[in-house]
Image 1: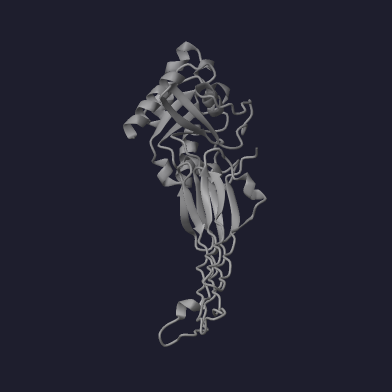
Image 2 (image 1 turned 90 degrees about the horizontal axis):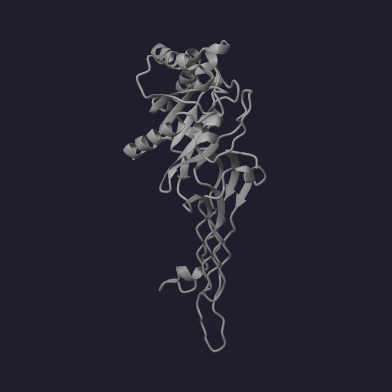
Length: 337
């Protein structure tokens, strides 16, 4: 299924039903009086968080969401039927924003949570409502009110505890394959990962966390280079970032220090708040280096970056150091809870 994390839809709540103008007419009951009923309320449009969905692809074809209108009131003090609420299922983690007002309507972060994005119109009043001691035969009614009509942008932001960042081919997809049951595509060319991937890292039957892998960043990503930064919003709810760097790159003309600074710079340009989130340095592909080179090369990178935070040496391909890293990540998440 194609991964779609943004959609724009036209939302129309139901119009309220009109009030009824009616007088009681029964044999042997003179001057029966007014008995026009109220109309029914218009239906709401409601988003429902469904944990079984992971994309907004359905809204590529369903561009209009319209709830049912309320029915007109009838004589005999009969109230019109209210319009049915339109419930639309979306993935957990979806935000709804009013495009015209540039206003956040709400977000769905828990399974089965509901969010009303358009309220139905109020019902009209029948003439029975206007009866009084001085007006025994009112001919006044009110029409139903129109429901909310708005253009809504739906944005999916994945719910993950930890996010992976790095340049293309830093080994992020291999890492998530090694530590979780996720199976993203892995290849020896850049931008193998074209959309975010989620993996559940399970350390024990009752101990786990969710890891998110987003497409790699390159220099100029904030200006749209490569896949740009459009997928970085999926890291907005993470509590910790793992910055993967290919420490073996120097063997092939690469510069791990420059690559690490490039990613940090693009994070800062995209969202200064995200750039200040706790970030751990993960020096990957140490299996390519000899035992003598491994320690010295990693220390050189850490010193050149003036890195003061946690730093780990791993090989995502062989799994060396990965289990120890995720165990420490889980311990840190427990501290942050």
